[in-house]
Structure formats: structure tokens, C-alpha cells
Image (cartoon, rainbow, N blue to C red):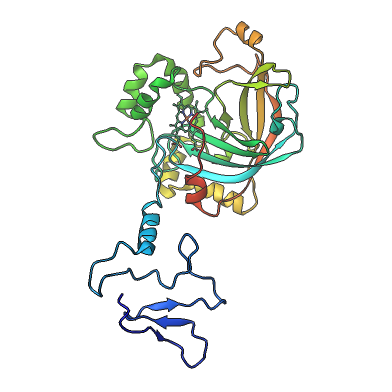
Length: 352
Ligand code: HEM
């Protein structure tokens, strides 16, 4: 816009010139102290973000128009690439409350201060589908929880199946390529019932335990509020004397484990492809806050040496008859995000 002609006031008679009209008829906001200012992302007051700076009315846009460049750059970054796995996720804020201290085993305050409520964010997802895929395919559900503890963030993941496909993480890219849609046709978008998957499974005997769980009712849950979360891996707790104890984490939904039958899941997918996300949203908005118990299996290295299997092998579980579960706390999800993209999509969570 050239400055040949002065801007005219739209409301000269009131003596309160809130808006001015520029040469092209565009409205300019004035900083009158009554309304929130339009600003750049850096907070610089701005009269106009609807007209770019040009060398003349029909001329080229000038690179020096940093307001235009800021607006377009911001727009270009409004999306992040979707996750390779677990792209379809639903996140909710909540808190964790410890009910049983693990002081004997660890110095981490979140696991030693009974009654302390720690804020958290949990994102529950399918594994195979893209971010716009249906909510009800036969697929493992998993969730990652970020605890905002006084001592820093602690991330913990759980899948609703207690074992994993592979023993060696180097096979993970091959597994995921096999799970994802067939490379030539781009489908199926969110389930594993296709050739590349069965080809991989047939060549990977250690995956058979996981396949048995995948074919169970667990992988067509009725609600995200009704899925268990198994940490799968063993972790280590260290106490103040430096003694180490192995731990496996288990989330158990207070609503219990409930599933759909296949026919229900298929019909639900057709009637409402956002079924699980909507169910969670409506539960939170109506105050039906879902809860999970956090339970642990604790064992020493000496005890682990006596197990007839390697507990560090993710294709094996530790039977509860061998190492019983102890409930140590609960998670309550009670606040839906304000901004799905900023909170649910951009949250950075662990990869295992
Ligand atoms: C071979 C081992 C594994 C590898 C290499 C692996 C890799 C990954 C990757 C690359 C992501 C996507 C991260 C992102 O883009 O934000 C992811 C997400 C996830 N993984 Fe794994 N994974 C493994 C095993 C597991 C296991 C055993 C579990 C369950 C206990 C698990 C649960 C999850 C969950 C819940 C997420 C989603 C986190 C979110 O909501 O963003 N993964 N994993």
C-alpha cells in the first residue's frame, strides 16, 4: 500500500476514532485502550493483518513485510507429521494419587509420598491406523502417561496386551511396515488383517504369543475407559541404599475390561468413526471421570534368576501367580484439553 493519501477516519463526529479506512478501503484497528490489541506473535501492536505490503497497488509483495511472513510461516507450521504408530489418539488431563508407598524400593517422591496428587496427561491410542482412521478396528490399544512430578516429568507407557511382537527392537521398523497398509494400494488403514502382516508373522516365530492376544476380545474394546495398560518391559527401582528391585507396571481400569463383539465393532465403525473419542469426551464433560489402579509386580535379580524364562524378553509375561500384583495408586482423568492440536497432538511421549 502506498502512502500517497492519508487514511480517513470512519467516525469523525464522535471524537473517538476507533477505526480508520486505508486507501484500499481496508479497516485499520486503532489502539484505543478498550479492546484487546491485534498483535504479531511477538506482541507488536498491529493495525492490519489483512493486506500485505506491496511496492505499488498492483505490484509485487515485498519481502520486508515481516507481518505477512510471520503469518504464513505460522500457518505452514500448524501441522506436525503424524506419529508413525499410535497416530490416532485421544488425550485427557488428570492426576495420579499414591495410596501405598514404595519407599523401601525407591527414592522417587511420586512413588513414596502417599496422598500426594500429581498432575498428568494421558493419551490413549490405536497402533496401526493414521490420525483420521476409525476408532474401532481390531488393534492393540496403548496409552502413554506423562506425570508432571515435583522432581521433573516421568513418562510411562502401557499397552492393553501384556507382551510384544518382537524380542529385538531392530525388527520394529519391519513390524510396523508390515502392520501398516499394503504399499501398493494404501489399505487397510487401521487393521492388521492383510498379507504383509501375515507374511511378517509367519517369518517371526517369537511374535506368536502376541498374535494370540491380538486375536482375543481385548483388541476390540468397548471404550478407551475399559482398557488395561501393561508396561511390558521390566524397569528398575533404586532405593536410598542403592539397592535395586525390578518392577513391572500395570494399569487396571476401575470399570473393568469390556469388549465389543466383532459385529458390534463393525456396525459402530460405520455409525460413528469417532466412537471411542466421543465416548471419552462425553464421559469427561458429564463428570464420569474414568479411573485406573496402578499396580506393580516387584522382584529382585536373584528371584528373576530362578524364573524359567527371561523377564527382559518382551514376548514373555510374568504370571501373577509367580509375582502377585500390588496396587499402589490410582489415576483419575478429569479434564478435556482446550486445544486438541497443542495438547493431544503435540505432546511428546516415550517411544516404548
Ligand atoms: C521394539 C520396541 C518398540 C519400539 C521401537 C517402539 C517405537 C515407538 C515409536 C516410534 C512410537 C511413536 C512415537 C511418536 O512418533 O510420537 C511409539 C509410540 C508408542 N509406543 Fe512404542 N515402541 C516399541 C515398543 C512398545 C511397547 C512394548 C509398548 C507398550 C508397552 C509401546 C507403547 C507405545 C505407546 C503407548 C505409544 C504412543 C505414545 C503416544 O501416545 O504418543 N511401544 N513407539
